[in-house]
Image (cartoon, rainbow, N blue to C red):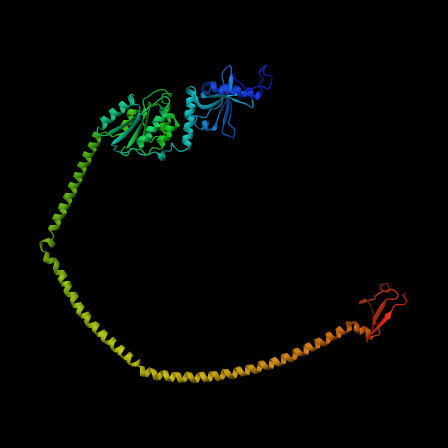
Length: 473
């Protein structure tokens, strides 16, 4: 066996690091045990949020750690639990951080009758929650099928029973057999594929899917999820005929109708031709009897009609109509005379209205109305002019009075403001004998603001003086 070179002299022992040793062991295990079947009991099962399952597989003397990754766990036949006795398929590997060897599980099957029953119940509960067993989605069987598809083994007793019963009940019904494996590895996939294949054939009316009796292991293909979903997705009605009357499979719950045996499925699928023919004969007899009664009724009605006077003396039927025509003719001429009189009176009234509406008479009336309106317009215009002139003069007087009053008020306000301004003016203080001393353009408020010898300017009420500081006190 070849390993990576250690860091010792060439003639010394080969020394591995822990990582190197673990990688070598992992390589040996993965090459030597790339596929292995292991049987044991599950314990310490845990499924974290990642969806991977970790557990220990043990027997009386040993145990091995196992991991079932999420993608393989989704395809498992059932959900394992602690204490389950299973057979698993996978490969050996080493988890390097802990230096532990483990089985990477790729397939998992329960071992024993109890485990199979548990897997059956788990799948049944799952499909029931999805609504695949809902009675509302089950379809009725066609009343008179002419072509039946059969999915079963080509060599078993079930297909012979189905064919014999179908031939006996109605030899005119065609049967299309799709042979499949009904037990063992790959059987479920073949059954599902056969259902899908027959669904693509246009003239098939319904499907019978099943097999003869056997143990739960023999019937297990019809408990697989792939078969249940193929039946649920079938566009054709499906009769499930698996095992004996006491046997129940997942296919029975999903199918549109469950037959206790394959023979019963054939009887439920196709009615007896002789019964159908008898029913048709009875329907024909009842229909002919009913039609004969209706014909007799109509014959009697026709006889009574022929005996009536209408057919024996047809001219007597026209006599009342001729009399009514004469009466209507008389009323018509009488009505026309009255209408002519009314129209003449109406014409005379219209002529009189036309005379009164003569253009000459209307023009004279319009001329008089125009003169009257002109007179009213002139009088109204003069009245409005006088009123406007009086209002204008009144507005002018009011404006003059308001302007005079406003000027008086403004003059009084001006005089009062001038008095207030004069009282506050510094020039008024100068008139009382005071003066302002300025140095460098600023008023001198303290002797500290100037020095001896500084020039200052004294402002009086009238005029200014240029002075020089000689002493400070």
